Image (cartoon, rainbow, N blue to C red; front, side, top):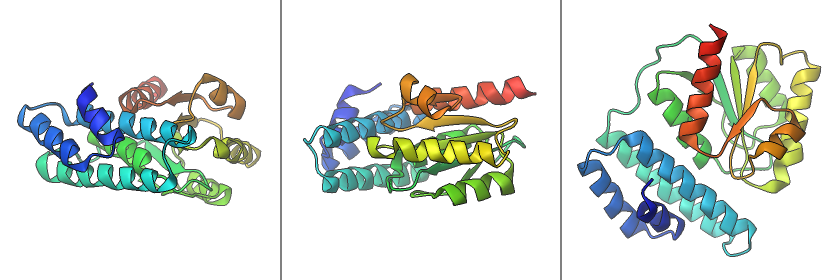
Length: 211
């Protein structure tokens, strides 16, 4: 964990963030560790927003900064490998939440491990989640949310998936600033992670346990 990098991003200091990023790349730091630090910084920005210290514009600017860094990483690193597994993972940000930078980080890290990921975007309705699960028959469904206001939306999505008979043999993982043990239990998910690296590890462990 590079605290200076995380602090620069969470302070929305573009110049310093990019300077530290390029130094980390030159030093040969694992791209997944750099990406995870971006995810941690994004969670910090979300907390500052919910505490009233940041505004929605700050969330957007921070998201744009991380997106820019991710684009540079794609050019700098051979981070995104081709798929090596058959199992599918569907990932989306729940409706009423348009923030997808954290989701994009998670998706990129899953793909860097050779996992087959279908990204269905942000502000995804219950109906679209159900359609994606029915179409792709994923081994894992990842649901992201940054704001506490969408907790019940996620609960509705999971409940509806169960009512449609689509939960069997599928694990559900939660991600985002609001993810914790109590929230996981409340919405009846199988697991959660605020740390993208840990989230990837959980997904790999689930897939391997299913073989």
